[in-house]
Length: 358
Length: 222
Image 1: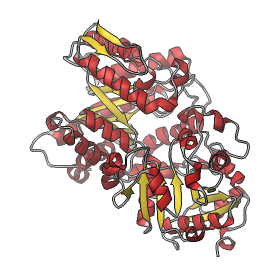
Image 2: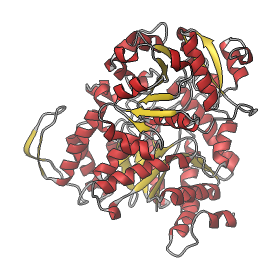
Image 3: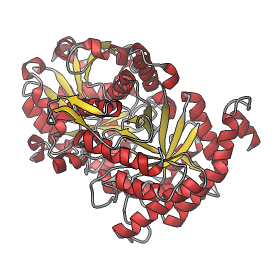
Image 4: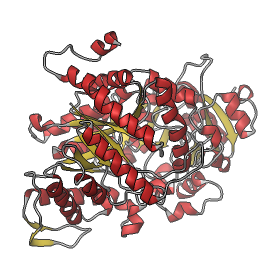
């Protein structure tokens, strides 16, 4: 199973000090975090796309290109590309170029994203969301398969036998579909035979089992090759030397981000006790704690869902850089060996072995 | 409203994250549940079978016609596309939110001094609109349910202009596993909206009644 991280590159104030980084400082940090993820052997780094003052990654492909020049092995993905408000030709060209720079490490994760500011920015109507997404995903997949493209749709000028270059280093760019829990989105990913990245950011993870059943059923019904099916979970979390430290890096920062994004009144902010409960429950969505705790929860989800990939969001809110760097180091050097040992054929099955060892 | 005071069959319009979660709680509480999206019910047959087992997929207009009570959990911009005639004399639970950063700007809901449910009521003038569910998170709705006598039972606030409709929804809320806190007229539901006093709040009935400045729930539902 692949293990990695993703970030939205927020630039929020620190809930304790009130300090906010400049965009330049934040970009520098993000690139250092990707570089470290590569050095400690993580498999994937994903970067979200947001067009807001409190984020710095409106153009994930550009940041990932800078990261590509400083890394060797880590796969570089968007998380997610807001395809409905983008031009798929531009997206394909950008990630194809990233693929050449990185020697075949580029991936695209498409989805709706959490915010919708890109729709008015690029002149699209959110009311057309589903139609836009279907149409643009169709074009992106066609570009992936065909060097010359002939295509017509309702939301973009038609293309007639036009070449799109450069072609990627990989035979095709991997295109994952990010799904946030909407059954129709899981069905669409299955119908298209695309890998699914399921965002599970709250509650009991087992609740998402039926969505994957739905995905698999549609995948099979459309006649896709089961051996090519890939499932990822994208979760919130943090790794630290103690479980309290991990909670300290999650609770105030996540609550602060929620307050900023969701306009929650102070009385509605989740308490530390709420996060602790999600942390301590094996099936709780929050994957935060010591390396052993985090490995145990990842393995639980792997065994529950049959995962090919697990991505942790570091961080929610803007957690101090040194703490994020420590977390990346622990994920690569301590969590990954535990997870990989369990992934080897013949290894004791499931989370139970880690539990009994802990 | 007649039979809708003790609803037995409930239509849930919208099979997204919120609609499917609400539908499951209703099935668990013993209601017959019809679910609908836009278009052919065949398209949501798999969702019904796998994600909301026990729910019956229907075309939206058929579900509404057959139901004693309707739960709306569709994108807000689609409400204006509903046929108001179908909703005449129906109790309609509005579990939706207007949240521009996430849902985009919808002109109709931008100017809503009486709250967004009042806009929904204006679009469905014959319906008895009741606001609830919208202030809880879709992933909290199922795990937070508790039996009636549980000490840690949480509350859901309810606002509506029709006393009969509000009582019917209060009984429903109690039956799925929450203490109902009736806060008054539909316009009072502003407190349940994003930015409102109890939006996102996980409170018991007493805390919620305090936060909203209403009577204690014991004296509310007979």
